[in-house]
Length: 485
Image 1 (tube, rainbow, N blue to C red):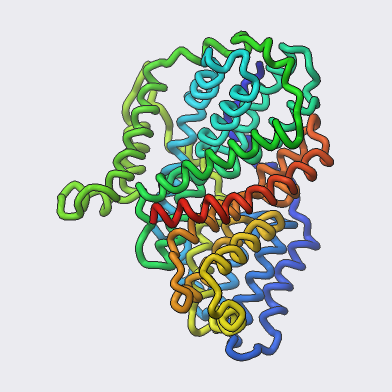
Image 2 (cartoon, rainbow, N blue to C red):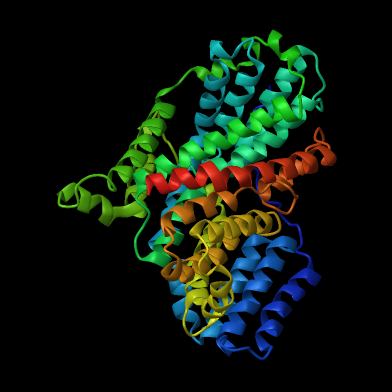
C-alpha cells in the first residue's frame, strides 16, 4: 500500500480570495459601527463585528489569515494592540502547542504512526469479524488523529483501499464509503482524547482562561475517552443496523494487507515512543499527585511548554544511528501548523473580550435567556447549548464556536446551578461533531474531496449521525460527565 505518513503541506502559492478578504474586514469594521442596544456598549459592538468577521473569514478565506486579522482588530478595538498581541501570542499555551507539534512531527518522520496503524489491523482477533475490524480501524484513526488528523486519515484510507482490493469490492462500495466517512467522524472526536495534546489541550486551556483553573486532567480523561469510544460504537451500530452495510465479503480478509516492515520497531522509534508516553504520563500525574509534594509543584511550574521543551531539546541533541531525532529548524518549518497555533492564540483575547463587563454581551444574552429558562431544569440549558453547538460547528470553526458559547454558559451558571466543567466537556464533544458540510473542518473538507465518497452518502450519513450523537450527548453523555465531575 502507499505510505502517506507526513502531514500534507498547506497549499503553497495559492492566492487568497480577495473579495472574501475584503468582506471579512468590512464585516469586522462595519458591524462594529452599528449603534449598540443597551446593555451592549460601543466596545461590545466592535467585538461582535470581529466575531462575525471571524465566522465569515474562516469559512471563506483562511483560518490563519482571519485569526491574525481578528487579533489585530481586537487590539484596535481595545485601544492597545500591544497588550492584546501579548495576551494572544505571548502565552505559555501557544509555546506549549509549538513544542507539542514539533514532537508530533518526530512521530510522523520516524513512522511511529505507521507502526501503530499496522499493529492495530494485524490483530488476529479481527480476521473474519468485519465489524470488529471496522471498529478497530476507526479507533486507530481516533487515537492517531492526536498526532495529525489529515495524515492519519490518508494513512488509514490506504488500509481501507487495500482491504477493498483484497476482497474484491469497489473502493466506493457502501462499506468503503462508510469507512471514509467514519474516518472523519473518528478523527474529529479523537483529537479530544487528552487534555495535553491537540484540541483537547486547547479546550482545557480555554477553560483555564475563563475559569482561572484547568480541568482536572484525570477526570477529563475519565470523562472524555469513554464518550469518544461510545460515539464510534454508535456509528458502527448505525452502519450495521440502520444503513445495513453489507460486509459479508470482508469475512475473507486476512493479514496480507498489513505492512510487516512497519511492525519492526527501531531504536529511534522506541525513543520517540517512550518520550511521548513519559510526557503524557507526567503531565497527567500533575493533576493527581498531592499538591504538597515538591514533584507536583515542579510539574505544574514546568507545565506543557517546559516539559515539551525538554523533549524537543533531547530530540535535537541525542544521536541515534549517527543523527539526532530532529533538527529544530526543520521540525519548526515543516511540523508546526501555524493555523492551529494562531487560532489558539486568538481564543484567549476573544474569550476575555466576549465576557468583559465593558462589552455587555453576556449581560444581554443573560437578560434574554433568564426569563425563558427560569424555573427550568439545568438540562434544558445544556440541551440548548449542545444543539446550537452541533449545528454551528458544521458552519464554522469548532473552537471559535466553543469560545463563543462557553462564556454564555458561565454567565448563566450563577442562576441555574450548572456544573460548568461537565457542560464544557459536553460542549467540546458537540462542537467536534463536524462532518455534515465540507466547511465544517479541514478533515470534513478532505473527506468530501475523496473521489470514492459520494456527497449524497455523506449528507445522509452526516445528518443521521448528527441527530443520533446529539441525543447520545444529552442522555448518556450528560449522566456520565455529571457522575465524573
